[in-house]
Amino acid sequence: MRDETALTADQKQVRAQLQQGLDFKTAGTLAQRFKAVVRERHPAELAEWIAAGQSSGLRELASFTEGWHRKAPHVPAALEVLYSTGIAERNITRLKQIRRAIYGRGNFDLLKIRMRVPA
Image (cartoon, rainbow, N blue to C red; front, side, top):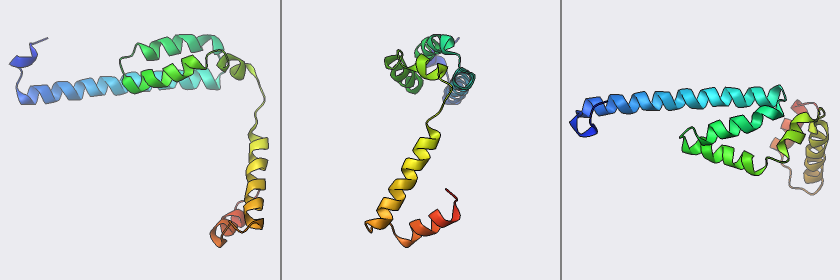
């Protein structure tokens, strides 16, 4: 690699674009690994993914993986459980919409949306 001071402005721009491309590639690869860990429920691979994200050199990804690292004791258990709270969450949201309509906070637009989408 050449000395940074010996590069022309065009060469610096090309180098920055290449580095940005490598960053996107790294982030994309780690995102795909994360998706596989979560969807296929592999809690054992989560620690490896967190370590890879923290050592990737990407500030945003390192911050994201740090949050997962703080939750590390709870995440493997969540990946091992086969049931979802989606049905309960849907019903809670529906009840909140009805309550808003009863107390006058729901407007006509909310009612139109609610009528279009079946519960």
